[in-house]
Amino acid sequence: MLQEKLQKVVLLFKSIRWRLTTIYLFIIAISFSTIGGYFIWRIEDFYLENLQRHVLNNAFILAELFSTLRNSGEASSGLIDEVCKKMGASMESRITFISEDGSVLGDSYQDVHLMENHLQRPEVQAALAQGKGISRRYSTTTDMHMFYMAIVVEESSTRDIIRLAVPLSYIQKNISQLRLILISGLLAALLISALLSLRFSGGLIKPLKEIGAVASSISSGDFDRKVVYQSEDELGNLAKTINEMGRTLKEKVRQISQEKSKLETVISAMTSGVILCNARGSIDFINDAALKIFAVEREDVVSLSLQAALRNVVLFENLQEVLEKGEMKSFELNLFFPDTRVLQVYMVPVIGETGKEIMGALAVFHDITGIRSLESMRSEFVANVSHELRTPLTIIKGYAETLLGENNQQDAETVKKILTIIDKEAERLARLLKDLLNLSRIESRKGVMKKQEVNIKQVVAEARGLLQAQAREKALNLNLRLPEEELKSIKGDSDWLLQLFIDVIDNAIKYTPQGGSIDIKIEQRSKEVLVSVSDTGIGIPTKNLPYIFERFYRVDKGRSRRLGGTGLGLAIVKHIVDAHNGRVEVKSTVGVGTTFYIYLPSTRKLQ
Image 1: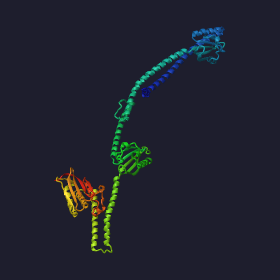
Image 2: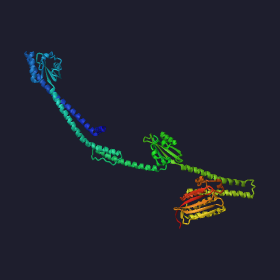
Image 3: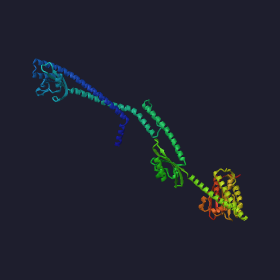
Image 4: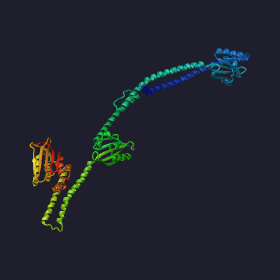
């Protein structure tokens, strides 16, 4: 408690108000002291001048008197001493009569026989040399400070000296009283000045305190507070400047906040990850996309070093190189957690205002996993197409060379067999090219999808009718079960939907042994139509189900080629379903059969 009070007192005396008051008092004290000192000096000098004139006049009277006595021959030592004592009492001065050799012949204060030689007294020496001598000193005889004046009695037969001594106590007493008066006046003036200074400085300090309070509020973010001070002086101008500064800062902060909000919105909406690191390599900012890429939480990584936060050596080494060299780096980064990703990273240094100091680094992460996957798929697709085309072309070319050989001695039946094989392989090529064109047309959307109201029962029935003969060749029962309630129509392309169901049913026919059955069922769900195609075929192993809709994927490649499959049928099915905003699901059991479930969104009841 005492320490707090002392601190308050110290702060009080450090305030501008007390400093101004102290300066005023110091100036007043110096002024009073200077003027008072000069005044006392002048008064003292005035007293001494008057005293000197008075003593000098008395000295001349005594010199005249003693000169007369000396010249008359009546002046004995006893008479001179008696005259000194009588005249000393009447003149209120100590009178000493000194001979030329320094002997004291008469003194108004002391017995001359007890007095020492006065030849070496300063005033005596001055009088002998100049005719008059003056001295101020402490007298051991009288125990007082004395004023001495000595003159030579010129008109006597000998050079006798008259010395008058007057105590300075009177002058010192008056000077002391005057000094006391001046000191009292100074103290009174200082007290009055202090009160007036505190009073008037309060009027000066009050607006300064208000200005300081407003400036503090502005520094804390309260830009609406104003200084209320109406004056045309310097403080008024300062108050106007502070108010204008607050208004300007408010506008600047508003603009900066808007720009910051826009920037944060843009960065947060970016699909690319953004990480900002400072010069120490610690993370200052990370956007939502980067958090998702690296599967971290913002509060767990901000302020941590990049290495500690993300645990990626490649990223950390590149950051160190950017911070050291100040050059941009571009590189690919492979991630294996939480997902396998390929990132294209651009890392640039953040340069300070001087253009030399590196403040940090900004890293932008573009997820190019899809691009790399597409490139891989394209390469794989080209390889698969090349492989699928090479086999029939090799067969056709081989048999063609056989027929065109110079020593061709084949009979008609062999030639017919060879031509049948060539025709079969050519037909296989034609199917492959047709499926490739259909797939390309669907994927690129360049083929115009004629969206119209489609009767799904008619499309499925048409597909069943086109494949009925093929099913009959294998003694398969191709059943179609229609719902009792009315079906809603499908908004789509009837040709594409026909292709879809032909591919699904054809696939079921190919992989269902003779004597089996294929059931086609149509159901109306709440907002979609379900078409299921179930067969009693060989089935698909569970491990292969996720891949059956990929291009050129075959569960049994040898069987597929023997049955005339191109490996593109189900890929076409998947793309057609996606184009109609539907979905396809598969359930299969090896040795039991397979069921395809095709869900297509419906619109309204058929008319």
